[in-house]
Length: 447
Image 1 (tube, rainbow, N blue to C red):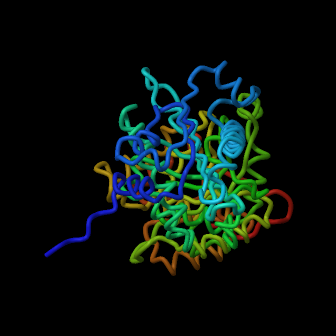
Image 2: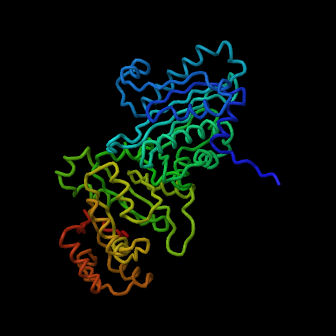
Image 3: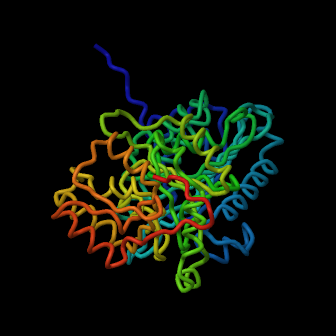
């Protein structure tokens, strides 16, 4: 019985070449000319490829696309798109404009250098027509390359580039369908897409928040940033060398998150920490991972709803696929070496200390070590004793006792039974756990 042939990267590139109406240029900086190479080697390239160029030399690149921008940046990519699109139209519109669906594909990539010391990431862009003579649409992606070798990273860029061109002509039914098409023959272990910018009639009606929520909900990024001003940036730009205050929470308890925790913790950051960084930044952080007994990650629409509510409090939101604080801090540490402060309430602290960490061979000790060896501090805020008692009863919390000060329970007044109590007192005395103090009269329950 005949089986349907898989529509892999080779077949996608060949189908574009044989289309007869899709025609354009390729300009690639860094990571070779891996996207153009697919179209050149599968056959029928003359039906698609007007030009390929690779401007590796900085002076050549500046002459083509202008100076004054970083070479691996969104402004450089947009300059490349403008230049290549203008040149394509000026040279070919008169002869092919009536029948050709023009496109200009560009990328600027920082693949792994010889020493392995660079941030492996890049920008990919495509400007294209859906119909000959129509209005242009455009997509710009920021990607993180996760393979350990330069050759594998080049390969991943080639596959992704072919997927981008193919998807813009065959998978625009929804954002979810489009992103799934971009990731075919790729995995999150190889490539992350953590920022997307689309415009034009091909993407009419698409919502930027929903699109970015799909990135993390669909497993195309480990984390996605939703800045407070809704100006979407990849994490490597938003978090770069920043002193960070993160207020973590779960979607089932998001209403308990309080913007005051971020504000109080930002105010308590030691001046040297802020001075040695590119400034302090406070954000909420949420995990889409299922809780105990639950299945499946949080859906994109629910992510959007909670992000909108949290942004009203004046801070941006980081949405992670992972739920463990040590995994969140490991992600953030890609981009900053400044200290990370988690602003939390007692409930998160107790959950952290009671977690079995079944995915780690060293269980609790390994989980705690992974967290605090990443230059992390927990700023823990108090909770009214009535709330502590209620939550202890509802969660079946056993083996913890506490003292009360003015109706509140502070982190240094919690007493887990031994042997956990010994570890807990060590973390307190070593100031890995800091005692947060509410400012003013606002001492609302936080968890």
